[in-house]
Image 1 (cartoon, helix red, strand yellow):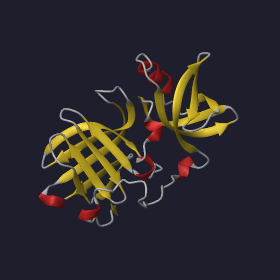
Image 2 (spheres, one colour):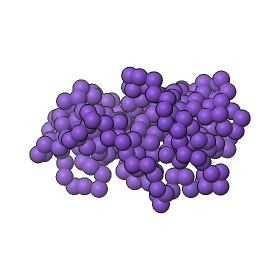
Image 3 (cartoon, one colour):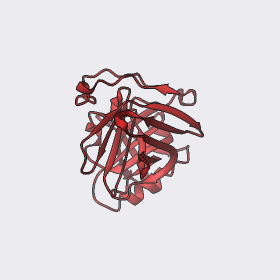
Amino acid sequence: MRVARSLIVVALLPLFAACQLFDGARTSASHVGQTRMQGQLTAADGKLVFQSCGEQRQYVVNDIGGTSILQEAATLADQQGKLFADVRGKIAGDRLDLTQLYRVERSGTACDDPNFKQLILRAAGHGPEWNVKVSGKGMVIDREGQPPLAVPYVEEQLGDGRFNLSSEANNQHIELWVAPQRCVDSNTGSVQHMSAELRIDGKVQRGCGYFGGSRND
């Protein structure tokens, strides 16, 4: 069980500013020798090619992890727009041996996300709109028609990659349940590697989630 640091109310607004200091990424033993990368996906000569954000070199994707990234990319490519991918793998010459897919989406701006490296987790859903950003400083919950809610949290590992973030702050019982399961955003079609449920005082809202740059699972 991991308890987040105390959250000071007056410091909530700049919580995700680039100048803030955050806990370092945790590295799983199974990821030794692998690198997490974000970049653009394109098709060339019947192959899927990956180009890291800010770099010119391209790598042919070799899906050794059985992530189905080729099928996911083909589905999203039916609509116009650049494809962004958040993946883990190992570079071998001009090849990317891909072992894990965190998310793939249609986006030309995701490489410029200033908050990614500071986030531990991001989860979001629709009907009504909601999203949660988690960092080492706390959880910030945005819900349609309501002001942002920032709270400290406790993390509980549940096994099989599942975990729960909970808080009793602001006289509310708040839980975010996360499980490693392919999840498709119902609005954008983006594919993320986790399903998520936000529960506030018994009301359940479902969505998808992915680890940010501060968590190296």
